Structures are given as C-alpha cells and as structure tokens.
Length: 176
Image 1 (cartoon, rainbow, N blue to C red):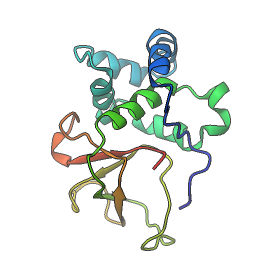
Image 2 (tube, rainbow, N blue to C red):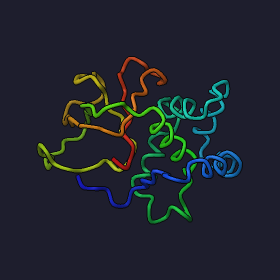
Image 3 (cartoon, helix red, strand yellow):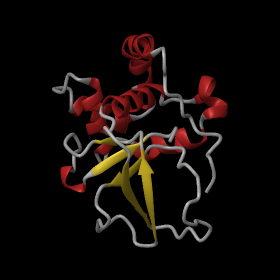
Image 4 (cartoon, one colour):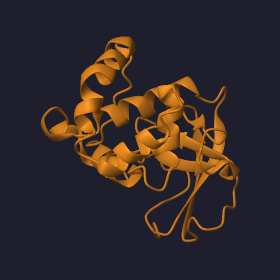
C-alpha cells in the first residue's frame, strides 16, 4: 500500500476538449483492435450516445475488460506514450468520473478478498487504478478479508448508470 507512483493518473485539466476530439477521431478506433472484450461491449451499448454514460456501462459490464484496464493503469506511466493501449478507455472513464463527481466528500467502502496486514487506520495511500467502492458498508460477494473505509472527494456515484445498479457504486479515479 503506497502512493502508486507508476499509475496513469492524468486528470486532463485544460485539454479536455482537445483530447476528447483526438479520442473520438483517432485513438478509440485504433484501440478497438487491442481488446475484443472492450470493443464488443462498447458496441453492445451503441444506443447510448453520451460517451461518458456509455463508458460507465462498459466498465461495469463483466465483459468490459475493466481488469485489463486497471492492470494497465496501475503500472502504465513508464510506457504510456509507447505501449499503453487503453488511452481512450482511461480518458473517457476519467472524464465520466469528473462529470458525475459527488457534490461533497463521502465515506465509501471497498471490500477485498486479499488480506492487507500492512494497512492501518489513517494511512494515506491510493489504489492507482479505478477503484470500485460502495456507499454500502456491507456488500456480499466482494470479499471479506479487508475492508477499506475511504473518504473520497473525487469519486462519482455511478450506480444509476451501472450494469448492476443495486450496489450503490462509487468509482474513485486513479489520481485520488
């Protein structure tokens, strides 16, 4: 548990519109070639014209390659310019979180199947990836070994747009 120095954590401040144009015109079509699960799931929700709502559907889908995205984001900073094949996915999800960001800082919970013996109360750290959390302190099926109680000020309540709306999901960006 550390500050995840190698994570891709750009907030795209000041270049949102320029990047969105590049993503739609050039990067997204190229990246469809790298991940069939992402491409198939993206196309499944083609009726959703809003890219930010659409990417949330993709991310919360079991077939949306969220684990591949998070693995790449978690260690992708050193190779971002040359070998990072999730620029579009990362940008769209980051902008979706910023668009639907909570109005105030909120306590959320993240249960894991991993036992973090080195975690302690008040420790400052970040996951360095998109972290799914819940407004609910108890959520069956997401692990029972370690529960992180997190105060997020940058997370977004995506439960109304999620494929699984009953979880009360709040998505925390890699930069928090």
